[in-house]
Image (cartoon, rainbow, N blue to C red):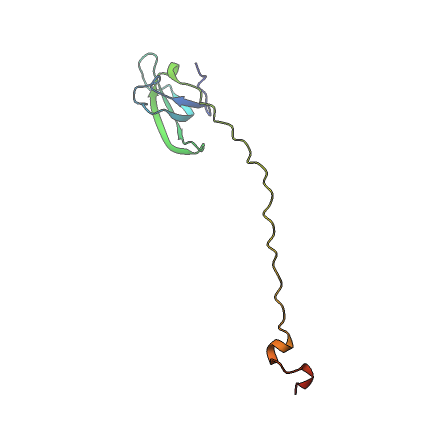
Amino acid sequence: MIELRAGVLIQVTRKASPQFVRPILFRLIRVRTEWITYDGWAWLDGYQIDAKGDAVARRSIYVQPAGLLPPEPTPTRRPAPASRPAPASRRVPPTRPHARDILGDKAVDELP
């Protein structure tokens, strides 16, 4: 059985309560001991956690603590293979037009 203390991450499934047909991750804030429950059941306050690890909703859930599970391990991601940086584009600097291109067939000596 998981120790219920603030901050623990748990997986809530049908084993804990029939309402959780689709399992959720839940970060516990506190166990509501002041609320009367049936034997073997408890009210928990906490946050529903999404796949990225972000809290998406604050909830109070009614569960059997014996049915709570530790979170499933997330698959470890391998670092992307180191790729070579893309070659720098060979940029040719703009060329200045030659005098013959501007003036045509006139020789440079014949300029006014």
